[in-house]
Amino acid sequence: MTENKVFIDTGVFTGIVEDIRGAASECVFPNSALKQADRLDTFNAGRKMHQLLQLIHETDELYRQESSESLPHGFLTMRDSMIAIDKASAESLTVEKINVGGMKR
Image 1 (cartoon, rainbow, N blue to C red):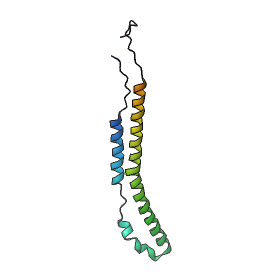
Image 2: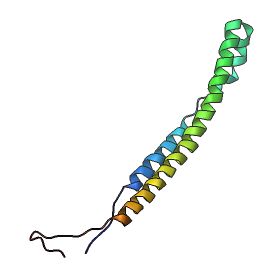
Image 3: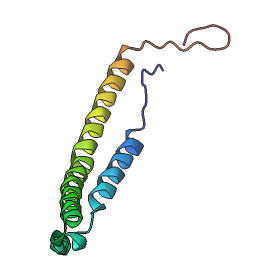
Image 4: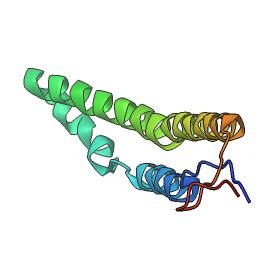
């Protein structure tokens, strides 16, 4: 009996992507420092530090969103493409099994 199958382990790949999604969504920069940052506004260097702290919080939220939503979505799209390529490759194979004596089965 001939088989025309090519296999990829999409379960492992999907698990890794879900781990990325979960880990990224849990990475939160605490805002406790930002709540008290107005105290820095009493001197020039403090105002600059306050601005930088606000920027850190803004980029932290953007990074978390991108890494927990956009990145996994892209990886899962890539996985689906790999599955489609795998299926097309498998369907295009012609397999003939030949035993040790050279006779086809």
